[in-house]
Image 1 (cartoon, rainbow, N blue to C red):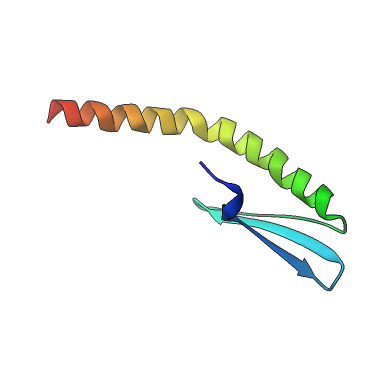
Image 2: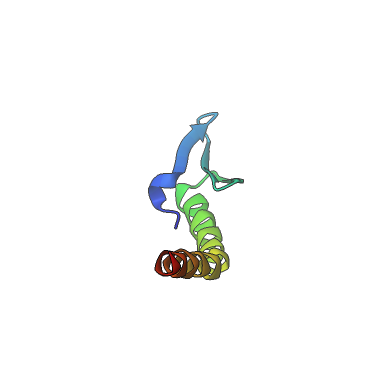
Length: 71
């Protein structure tokens, strides 16, 4: 699961805050002149991303566990 440390935060042109996420094949960016707004955008995307990936991670864990029992 992604964490806050997976995001890169930078200031562009001394005016815009940019928060980037480049992991697991995703390359998304959130920006605003207000840091709190950019952070809120990033966390909203992160919550939907975690909901989408949660069933896949759960299935993968079960598959590895089942495979280890069969071996």
